[in-house]
Image (cartoon, rainbow, N blue to C red; front, side, top):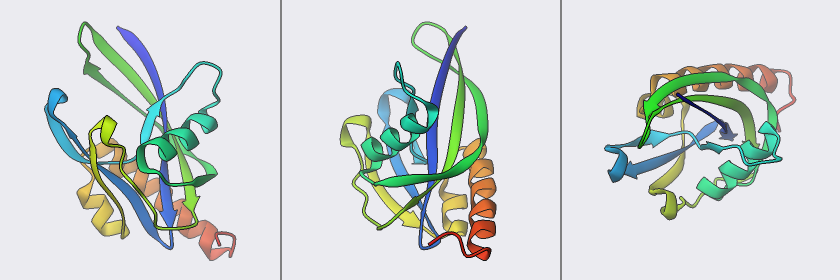
Length: 146
């Protein structure tokens, strides 16, 4: 089994969450996901999360705090891959997004929490979204978000 590590972000602007629509024909799935990607040599988890959000969505985002990790396994081309994903709550200053076509992202946008929750394809991303949104609301109540 091969180990892999990725990092991603729950990006929020004016209470709405950034999602990407991936149409991965070769992997036989399509659906709405949160931006995330593989850690490159020499990168911190935080650097990876910021870079991947920018690459996949075009959004300029700032990390506010870590949210937690998810773990899952999937079949790669030659073996089973055990993946850990480190997630961060992030903020953006605009609703701008432009999906990265080279990675099979066909659409992107910011959605209200309930819409985002039901659009997300994977249960583990729904759990991370819930944690992140609760943290966002807590920070906002203290007047520390904007």
